[in-house]
Image (cartoon, rainbow, N blue to C red):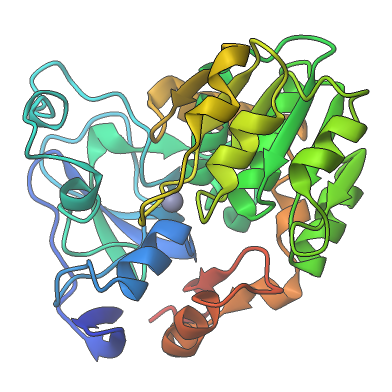
Length: 344
Ligand SMILES: [Zn+2]
Protein backbone atom coordinates (compact mmCIF):
# COMPACT_ATOMS: atom_id res chain seq x y z
CA UNK A 1 0.00 0.00 0.00
CA UNK A 2 1.10 3.58 -0.52
CA UNK A 3 2.08 5.65 2.49
CA UNK A 4 3.79 8.97 3.22
CA UNK A 5 6.64 7.81 5.46
CA UNK A 6 8.38 10.51 7.50
CA UNK A 7 12.15 10.45 6.89
CA UNK A 8 13.24 13.08 9.42
CA UNK A 9 14.53 16.58 8.65
CA UNK A 10 11.24 17.76 7.18
CA UNK A 11 11.08 15.09 4.48
CA UNK A 12 8.27 12.72 3.57
CA UNK A 13 8.76 9.94 1.09
CA UNK A 14 5.89 8.18 -0.64
CA UNK A 15 6.67 4.49 -0.29
CA UNK A 16 5.05 1.16 -1.01
CA UNK A 17 4.93 -0.58 2.35
CA UNK A 18 3.28 -3.78 3.53
CA UNK A 19 -0.38 -3.51 4.32
CA UNK A 20 -0.62 -4.18 8.07
CA UNK A 21 -2.64 -7.16 9.31
CA UNK A 22 -5.05 -6.75 12.19
CA UNK A 23 -4.14 -8.69 15.32
CA UNK A 24 -6.94 -9.99 17.59
CA UNK A 25 -9.29 -7.18 18.65
CA UNK A 26 -7.98 -4.92 15.88
CA UNK A 27 -9.46 -3.82 12.57
CA UNK A 28 -7.86 -2.68 9.33
CA UNK A 29 -9.35 0.58 8.06
CA UNK A 30 -9.21 1.62 4.40
CA UNK A 31 -8.54 5.35 4.78
CA UNK A 32 -10.84 7.56 2.69
CA UNK A 33 -9.91 11.02 3.97
CA UNK A 34 -7.18 12.14 6.36
CA UNK A 35 -7.30 15.74 7.57
CA UNK A 36 -3.96 17.44 8.18
CA UNK A 37 -3.65 18.58 11.78
CA UNK A 38 -1.60 21.50 13.10
CA UNK A 39 0.05 19.01 15.44
CA UNK A 40 1.42 17.09 12.46
CA UNK A 41 2.65 20.32 10.90
CA UNK A 42 4.47 21.07 14.16
CA UNK A 43 5.91 17.55 14.23
CA UNK A 44 7.26 18.20 10.75
CA UNK A 45 8.40 21.76 11.39
CA UNK A 46 10.27 20.99 14.62
CA UNK A 47 11.31 17.54 13.34
CA UNK A 48 9.67 15.80 16.32
CA UNK A 49 8.22 12.80 14.52
CA UNK A 50 10.41 9.69 14.55
CA UNK A 51 11.77 8.68 11.13
CA UNK A 52 9.84 5.74 9.66
CA UNK A 53 6.61 7.05 11.17
CA UNK A 54 3.40 7.56 9.22
CA UNK A 55 1.64 10.61 10.65
CA UNK A 56 -2.06 11.46 10.46
CA UNK A 57 -4.69 10.95 13.15
CA UNK A 58 -7.78 12.67 11.71
CA UNK A 59 -9.05 9.68 9.80
CA UNK A 60 -12.32 8.68 8.18
CA UNK A 61 -12.61 5.40 6.30
CA UNK A 62 -14.20 2.00 5.98
CA UNK A 63 -13.45 -1.21 7.78
CA UNK A 64 -11.56 -3.45 5.35
CA UNK A 65 -10.72 -6.43 7.55
CA UNK A 66 -11.52 -7.66 11.03
CA UNK A 67 -8.97 -9.25 13.32
CA UNK A 68 -9.94 -12.23 15.46
CA UNK A 69 -12.45 -11.72 18.26
CA UNK A 70 -13.81 -8.41 16.98
CA UNK A 71 -17.45 -7.88 17.86
CA UNK A 72 -19.86 -5.15 16.87
CA UNK A 73 -18.16 -4.13 13.61
CA UNK A 74 -18.45 -5.40 10.05
CA UNK A 75 -16.38 -4.99 6.91
CA UNK A 76 -17.61 -1.88 5.09
CA UNK A 77 -18.68 0.04 8.23
CA UNK A 78 -17.88 3.76 7.98
CA UNK A 79 -15.73 4.78 10.92
CA UNK A 80 -13.55 7.49 12.34
CA UNK A 81 -10.34 6.02 13.72
CA UNK A 82 -10.52 7.38 17.23
CA UNK A 83 -12.83 8.38 20.03
CA UNK A 84 -13.98 4.96 21.18
CA UNK A 85 -14.37 3.97 24.81
CA UNK A 86 -11.30 2.11 26.06
CA UNK A 87 -12.10 -1.13 27.88
CA UNK A 88 -11.26 -1.12 31.59
CA UNK A 89 -8.18 -3.29 30.97
CA UNK A 90 -6.67 -1.03 28.29
CA UNK A 91 -3.38 0.25 29.63
CA UNK A 92 -3.60 3.97 29.12
CA UNK A 93 -2.74 4.89 32.67
CA UNK A 94 0.89 5.91 32.10
CA UNK A 95 -0.23 8.95 30.17
CA UNK A 96 -1.85 10.37 33.28
CA UNK A 97 0.50 9.15 35.98
CA UNK A 98 4.03 9.02 34.58
CA UNK A 99 5.60 12.49 34.51
CA UNK A 100 7.97 11.45 31.70
CA UNK A 101 4.99 11.28 29.40
CA UNK A 102 4.12 14.72 28.15
CA UNK A 103 2.75 16.18 24.99
CA UNK A 104 6.12 16.10 23.25
CA UNK A 105 6.76 12.43 23.96
CA UNK A 106 3.17 11.18 23.77
CA UNK A 107 1.99 12.93 20.66
CA UNK A 108 3.83 10.58 18.33
CA UNK A 109 4.20 7.42 20.37
CA UNK A 110 1.19 5.62 18.92
CA UNK A 111 0.88 3.38 15.92
CA UNK A 112 3.65 3.60 13.36
CA UNK A 113 1.04 3.63 10.64
CA UNK A 114 -1.26 6.62 10.77
CA UNK A 115 -3.66 8.20 8.34
CA UNK A 116 -1.36 9.36 5.56
CA UNK A 117 -1.54 5.89 4.10
CA UNK A 118 -4.10 3.80 2.25
CA UNK A 119 -4.72 1.60 5.29
CA UNK A 120 -4.33 2.00 9.01
CA UNK A 121 -4.81 -0.30 11.98
CA UNK A 122 -7.04 0.54 14.91
CA UNK A 123 -8.14 -1.16 18.09
CA UNK A 124 -11.75 -2.22 17.57
CA UNK A 125 -12.75 -0.39 20.75
CA UNK A 126 -11.11 2.79 19.48
CA UNK A 127 -13.53 3.48 16.62
CA UNK A 128 -16.66 5.57 16.32
CA UNK A 129 -19.32 4.94 13.66
CA UNK A 130 -19.91 7.83 11.26
CA UNK A 131 -23.55 9.01 11.12
CA UNK A 132 -25.06 8.85 7.60
CA UNK A 133 -25.50 12.63 7.52
CA UNK A 134 -21.75 13.20 7.83
CA UNK A 135 -19.64 12.84 4.66
CA UNK A 136 -16.13 11.35 4.91
CA UNK A 137 -14.23 14.65 4.60
CA UNK A 138 -16.29 16.16 7.43
CA UNK A 139 -15.97 12.99 9.49
CA UNK A 140 -12.18 13.39 9.19
CA UNK A 141 -12.63 16.59 11.22
CA UNK A 142 -14.16 14.73 14.18
CA UNK A 143 -10.87 14.74 16.11
CA UNK A 144 -10.27 18.53 15.87
CA UNK A 145 -13.97 19.03 16.49
CA UNK A 146 -13.72 16.93 19.67
CA UNK A 147 -10.87 19.22 20.78
CA UNK A 148 -13.15 22.24 20.29
CA UNK A 149 -16.04 20.51 22.05
CA UNK A 150 -13.84 19.64 25.01
CA UNK A 151 -12.41 23.18 25.18
CA UNK A 152 -15.91 24.62 25.35
CA UNK A 153 -17.14 21.99 27.82
CA UNK A 154 -14.19 22.82 30.08
CA UNK A 155 -14.97 26.53 29.78
CA UNK A 156 -17.40 28.73 31.67
CA UNK A 157 -19.29 29.76 28.49
CA UNK A 158 -23.00 30.26 29.10
CA UNK A 159 -26.06 31.56 27.34
CA UNK A 160 -25.66 35.14 26.18
CA UNK A 161 -21.88 35.34 26.59
CA UNK A 162 -19.53 37.27 24.38
CA UNK A 163 -16.66 34.97 23.41
CA UNK A 164 -13.29 35.90 21.95
CA UNK A 165 -11.41 33.51 19.66
CA UNK A 166 -7.75 34.12 18.92
CA UNK A 167 -6.74 32.32 15.73
CA UNK A 168 -9.29 31.22 13.11
CA UNK A 169 -7.57 28.10 11.85
CA UNK A 170 -9.61 24.87 11.89
CA UNK A 171 -9.55 24.64 15.70
CA UNK A 172 -10.51 28.30 16.14
CA UNK A 173 -13.37 28.03 13.66
CA UNK A 174 -14.62 24.85 15.31
CA UNK A 175 -14.28 26.40 18.81
CA UNK A 176 -16.21 29.41 17.65
CA UNK A 177 -19.07 27.23 16.46
CA UNK A 178 -18.93 25.03 19.57
CA UNK A 179 -19.08 28.14 21.80
CA UNK A 180 -22.14 29.31 19.91
CA UNK A 181 -23.75 25.88 20.26
CA UNK A 182 -23.09 26.21 24.02
CA UNK A 183 -24.89 29.55 24.18
CA UNK A 184 -22.43 32.28 23.23
CA UNK A 185 -24.36 34.91 21.30
CA UNK A 186 -21.53 37.22 20.25
CA UNK A 187 -18.26 36.03 18.76
CA UNK A 188 -15.18 38.23 18.35
CA UNK A 189 -12.24 36.83 16.41
CA UNK A 190 -8.58 37.78 15.92
CA UNK A 191 -7.04 36.39 12.72
CA UNK A 192 -4.44 37.79 10.31
CA UNK A 193 -4.95 35.50 7.28
CA UNK A 194 -7.63 36.99 4.96
CA UNK A 195 -9.20 33.66 3.92
CA UNK A 196 -9.55 32.53 7.54
CA UNK A 197 -10.87 35.94 8.63
CA UNK A 198 -13.49 35.83 5.87
CA UNK A 199 -14.58 32.36 6.90
CA UNK A 200 -14.95 33.54 10.51
CA UNK A 201 -17.21 36.32 9.23
CA UNK A 202 -19.18 33.87 7.06
CA UNK A 203 -19.68 31.68 10.13
CA UNK A 204 -21.18 34.57 12.04
CA UNK A 205 -18.37 36.39 13.87
CA UNK A 206 -19.61 39.84 14.94
CA UNK A 207 -16.14 41.26 14.30
CA UNK A 208 -12.78 39.99 13.05
CA UNK A 209 -9.70 41.91 14.17
CA UNK A 210 -6.46 41.76 12.19
CA UNK A 211 -3.68 41.43 14.80
CA UNK A 212 -1.05 42.65 12.29
CA UNK A 213 -2.86 45.94 11.79
CA UNK A 214 -4.84 46.51 14.97
CA UNK A 215 -4.29 46.22 18.72
CA UNK A 216 -6.30 43.11 19.61
CA UNK A 217 -6.73 44.03 23.28
CA UNK A 218 -7.92 47.54 22.45
CA UNK A 219 -10.33 46.31 19.79
CA UNK A 220 -11.79 43.55 21.99
CA UNK A 221 -12.35 46.15 24.74
CA UNK A 222 -13.93 48.62 22.32
CA UNK A 223 -16.24 45.93 21.00
CA UNK A 224 -17.42 45.05 24.51
CA UNK A 225 -17.98 48.52 25.93
CA UNK A 226 -14.66 48.43 27.75
CA UNK A 227 -15.43 45.24 29.70
CA UNK A 228 -13.74 42.54 27.62
CA UNK A 229 -15.21 39.24 26.41
CA UNK A 230 -16.56 36.83 29.06
CA UNK A 231 -14.37 33.97 27.82
CA UNK A 232 -11.46 33.98 25.37
CA UNK A 233 -10.12 30.83 23.66
CA UNK A 234 -6.48 31.04 22.56
CA UNK A 235 -6.47 28.85 19.47
CA UNK A 236 -3.19 30.31 18.16
CA UNK A 237 -0.72 29.80 21.01
CA UNK A 238 2.01 31.79 19.37
CA UNK A 239 3.90 34.96 20.28
CA UNK A 240 1.92 37.00 22.81
CA UNK A 241 -1.55 35.61 22.09
CA UNK A 242 -2.02 34.10 25.56
CA UNK A 243 -1.01 37.35 27.27
CA UNK A 244 -3.34 39.25 24.92
CA UNK A 245 -6.22 36.98 25.92
CA UNK A 246 -5.47 37.38 29.64
CA UNK A 247 -5.31 41.17 29.32
CA UNK A 248 -8.41 41.48 27.11
CA UNK A 249 -10.79 39.17 29.00
CA UNK A 250 -13.27 40.76 31.40
CA UNK A 251 -12.72 40.98 35.16
CA UNK A 252 -13.10 37.45 36.63
CA UNK A 253 -13.47 36.19 33.09
CA UNK A 254 -11.82 33.08 31.75
CA UNK A 255 -9.11 32.28 29.23
CA UNK A 256 -8.87 28.78 27.80
CA UNK A 257 -5.58 27.78 26.16
CA UNK A 258 -6.50 25.41 23.34
CA UNK A 259 -3.52 25.60 20.98
CA UNK A 260 -0.32 23.88 22.07
CA UNK A 261 2.48 26.48 22.16
CA UNK A 262 5.80 24.91 21.18
CA UNK A 263 7.87 27.91 22.10
CA UNK A 264 8.02 29.99 25.30
CA UNK A 265 5.36 32.67 25.48
CA UNK A 266 5.83 36.02 27.24
CA UNK A 267 3.41 36.63 30.13
CA UNK A 268 3.11 39.77 32.23
CA UNK A 269 0.86 38.69 35.14
CA UNK A 270 0.87 42.16 36.73
CA UNK A 271 -1.30 43.23 33.81
CA UNK A 272 -4.11 40.78 34.54
CA UNK A 273 -3.77 39.27 38.04
CA UNK A 274 -5.61 42.13 39.73
CA UNK A 275 -8.65 41.27 37.62
CA UNK A 276 -8.67 37.71 39.01
CA UNK A 277 -8.73 36.15 35.57
CA UNK A 278 -9.06 32.34 35.41
CA UNK A 279 -6.79 30.38 33.11
CA UNK A 280 -7.64 26.86 31.98
CA UNK A 281 -6.00 24.50 29.58
CA UNK A 282 -7.60 21.70 27.63
CA UNK A 283 -6.13 18.67 25.93
CA UNK A 284 -7.55 16.46 23.22
CA UNK A 285 -11.02 15.00 23.56
CA UNK A 286 -12.41 12.01 25.42
CA UNK A 287 -14.96 9.57 23.94
CA UNK A 288 -17.92 11.68 25.09
CA UNK A 289 -16.39 14.70 23.32
CA UNK A 290 -15.98 12.66 20.11
CA UNK A 291 -19.62 11.55 20.28
CA UNK A 292 -20.77 15.12 20.90
CA UNK A 293 -18.60 16.28 17.98
CA UNK A 294 -20.19 13.72 15.63
CA UNK A 295 -23.69 14.71 16.83
CA UNK A 296 -22.96 18.42 16.33
CA UNK A 297 -21.49 17.78 12.86
CA UNK A 298 -24.46 15.56 11.92
CA UNK A 299 -27.03 18.13 13.07
CA UNK A 300 -25.21 20.99 11.36
CA UNK A 301 -24.88 22.98 14.57
CA UNK A 302 -21.18 22.80 13.78
CA UNK A 303 -20.46 23.05 10.07
CA UNK A 304 -17.48 20.98 9.02
CA UNK A 305 -18.38 21.65 5.37
CA UNK A 306 -17.66 25.36 5.93
CA UNK A 307 -14.00 24.57 6.59
CA UNK A 308 -13.61 22.57 3.39
CA UNK A 309 -13.64 23.64 -0.24
CA UNK A 310 -12.53 21.94 -3.47
CA UNK A 311 -9.11 23.49 -2.85
CA UNK A 312 -8.82 21.62 0.47
CA UNK A 313 -8.15 18.23 -1.09
CA UNK A 314 -4.68 17.00 -1.94
CA UNK A 315 -3.30 13.65 -2.99
CA UNK A 316 -0.68 11.70 -1.10
CA UNK A 317 1.95 12.78 -3.65
CA UNK A 318 1.36 16.44 -2.75
CA UNK A 319 2.06 15.94 0.94
CA UNK A 320 5.66 17.24 0.98
CA UNK A 321 4.80 20.51 -0.77
CA UNK A 322 1.66 20.90 1.32
CA UNK A 323 3.49 20.55 4.64
CA UNK A 324 6.14 23.03 3.48
CA UNK A 325 3.39 25.50 2.61
CA UNK A 326 1.56 24.93 5.91
CA UNK A 327 4.65 25.98 7.90
CA UNK A 328 3.98 29.54 6.71
CA UNK A 329 0.84 31.43 7.64
CA UNK A 330 -1.48 30.17 4.97
CA UNK A 331 -4.50 31.21 3.00
CA UNK A 332 -5.63 27.61 3.27
CA UNK A 333 -8.06 26.75 6.05
CA UNK A 334 -8.22 22.96 6.16
CA UNK A 335 -6.25 20.52 4.07
CA UNK A 336 -7.50 16.96 3.61
CA UNK A 337 -5.51 14.14 2.07
CA UNK A 338 -7.88 12.27 -0.22
CA UNK A 339 -6.88 8.62 -0.20
CA UNK A 340 -10.13 7.33 -1.66
CA UNK A 341 -9.01 8.29 -5.15
CA UNK A 342 -5.94 6.14 -4.80
CA UNK A 343 -7.75 2.93 -3.99
CA UNK A 344 -6.04 -0.20 -5.15
ZN1 LIG B 1 -5.47 16.71 15.27
